[in-house]
Image (tube, rainbow, N blue to C red; front, side):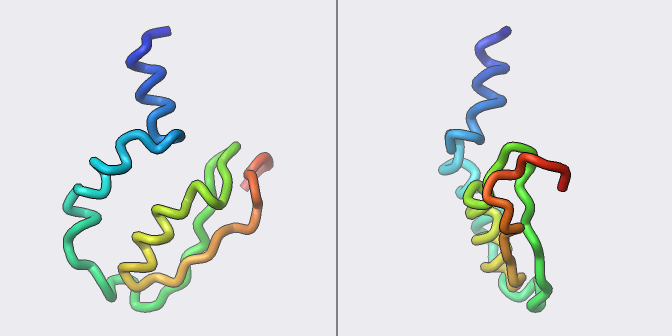
Length: 79
């Protein structure tokens, strides 16, 4: 196991790189109204929790989508 591979895999899980991500133009450029009020159900990947999708939901909400979590708590089944 190479250390850099472990860091690359675990960094998003523990929030490393979030500041860099939020400085990217996709987060900083105006985009309000793109979603036009369309609903989006945000489902975490296997082993993920609804709370882990908060950043994505915030970004989608800011762009005019109406988001909701999947209500799974932690996703441990097929989704």
